[in-house]
Image (cartoon, rainbow, N blue to C red; front, side, top):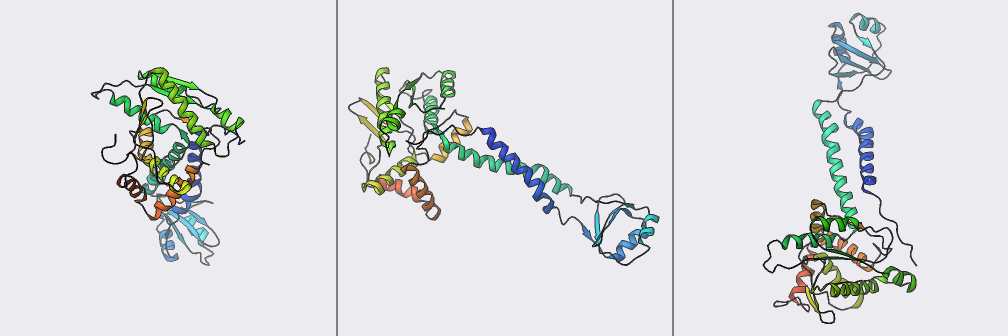
Length: 347
């Protein structure tokens, strides 16, 4: 039996990583970017500025002489020469000796490095981490579908009633309270059905490939819950990417061309299954969930990111790097064959 995963790290953990990267960037990279802000002059120019008392601060080293003008706005450097009277001439010119001369940054560089660059880094890393976290969250597709259907109830002529049902499979660390509160605030009836699916699949049966049995048991519990509440249509959150992945899974693992139907009548349960998100990609749905601030529940399933579907996801990602329209072509082929339930005139 595989160990059940603990919940994913909180969002503040990832933001701390972003802040640490920005800090290290300013500590290590910014000095490299500001190197080139020193104006190099010959020794004669240095002597001329000394005679005209235009030297502000000076730092004498074995390999170079750094000095500023009287206002301290510009830093210069020159190579040292054998000049035994240099120190006295500098004193006479009113120059101030110092151990360290800070190299100034132009106002534009200062603005870019201090304000713009950290914001850009924070936004890019935040967006990347947000996408990675979104992939680890459970229920984003269902929550996007629920939000869309709730909006649709306001003007759809059929005046359908909407109810949300969650199947709790018994994995620890999954708190559905945010989903319940979201539904309550918007007047959507919400039911949480507790089951022992995890115990049966992972403890009692110890399935090597548990996803298939888990899916069947979850669907059975959902059908029972629908029957008890008098629901006659089940809206599922399967999307464009799910359809492509399912088709390729059937092709590669079973040698068959098949996929779930956009709409299916389940005669034994007496309900229609519909998939309204089928033409939306996973990226579009994830963006919608982020923009709307929809509540998500981190999954603690031990098979998360280790299933055959995840293998297909990675395969599609690799192939799409060379064939960018791969998913569009696979989806189009499913319609043109057509697969059962995918052709023209299908419900």
